Image (tube, one colour):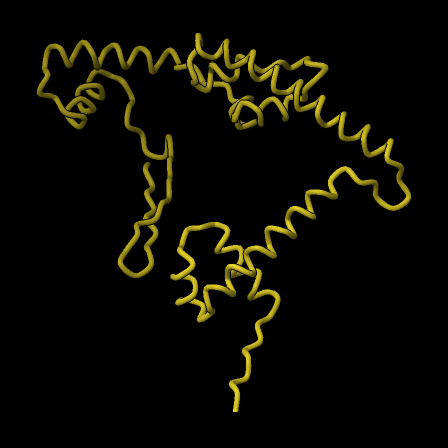
Length: 205
């Protein structure tokens, strides 16, 4: 009595075929992992590739109710837009070699009044976050600049002073420093463990 042939779902075939196309594992390894004969995997892989060729062969064909002329026009429009973006990006990267690939250097390349590209698209092409585009650094206050100058002068006189002794010296000199609840900062990250991970939270007053 013959052995009944095992039936596989379409999803399973696609999963194995995609894994074979990626070539991260050999066909022999896939055969062992999925319990499928290697010749069957080769066949599914061939069907997948042939189907992909047919899929890409339909690109540019008009949808129902559209003409070939409309589809071709759309295709040329996309090509023209990509060419324009490439030329813009090429020019900007030439300037970037002189400025350096810093956030400030990228921000300087944005054209707010560009008629060709929106600010959003320019940020995407340059790999610049829009939030960093509008960020303005806060300048140091006169009080902080004065305190930093005093700390530098005192440190030259007493380089063995740590932060606590320097705070006491500034307080005795009449400067209100290290006040409670003046500034808060917090951050969170995670520490990987052998099984899972744990969160680590830091709060600084």
